[in-house]
Image (cartoon, rainbow, N blue to C red):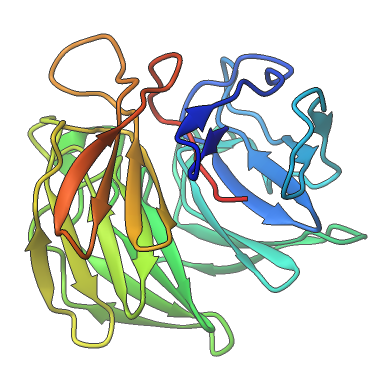
Length: 276
């Protein structure tokens, strides 16, 4: 856990077991929940930790009663009212990348249903919520980087309708995204030639116009990012060489520059980050 004011890291209790792959996370009812990746195969469970503004570092993780719709990895999810909207991913049931959009109630009876199917399957993509609209960006249709996408899809949850928006400037997967007003900022990732990226795009949802922000100091494939005040903070990922990155950097919209922050205690790749 990183304290933004003090610029210090504190170690929380470890997860109950090692989880590989990119998890998704959300905060609901004073709990931080991680919808897991795979260990070592795809799994469908979630774990959570009770949080508040002064978290108790001794609190342990517990099993969450909510489950993913099937054994997935490399999916993306957003919290929408009392429901978790899960898109795509690699499914153990079908042994392939799925095009499904699922809705999971995060309150009893934790009902799961299939909302829709995307025009193409996606994994290692990102999603951001704008009112009742889900924006689905990039990703790959297979497990091969050369099958990465630049497309941006708008899914109207209430109307159950799709609209194809203007694409990103290039194909990308394994990136991080954050919402910034009417924009989505796309951070790092990997291109279709399997090269890690330090590039940053700001994509306007209303116009479909993309602009490039200053590049990060490091190439970051499989990184995580959050917004804190007037800053975008990027954590970890993988660059041109091993090991995984422990570095952290922040982009400030006033100075329009990236600055390094204190490092994490260990390198992380395909991880999650969330503001509490």
